[in-house]
Image (cartoon, rainbow, N blue to C red; front, side):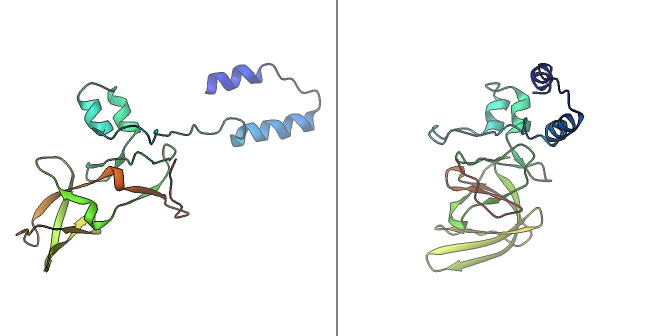
Amino acid sequence: IESYAEFSRSFVRFCAADISRIVNAEYAKGRYWPEPLIQINPSYKSGETVLQLAEAGVLHPVTAKIFQIKKSSGDHLPIPASARAQEGQEVVYGTRPEHLEIASGDQGIAASVVVVEPTGPDTHVFTKIANIEVTSVFRERHTFRPGETIRLRPDASRAHLFDASTGQRLAA
């Protein structure tokens, strides 16, 4: 974009210094060259995450660094297909407790079990992920113990992103 901005500006010459100052100030603010908006088409069929596709060689490895939500633990959250956020934008990831599932191996996100509470037909599992309290609800019984590490995977098709500063849902 920078090269193209320089190219397009090369056609414009200002004779009046005051107009030149105003227009150049607007250019410096990014008014004419805003950050690109990165969107994912919501009609695409859900499948592997961007990270999985990059690891399989389907996508360039750099793509996994751009299209991801990364926790300090190094685990990755799958991006909802309807998400609309700009690169570097601070977001809040949202999912309902019943939209989390137990993951196996190194899939999902590491979660430290705090409390397991059977409640009739459901089991509520209270965990911490990167010091954030996360509740999950399962129809089946689990015998997790406090302090145990389990792996949770959110259903990306039911997750949402929110702007961290405004709380607005970021959707296409």
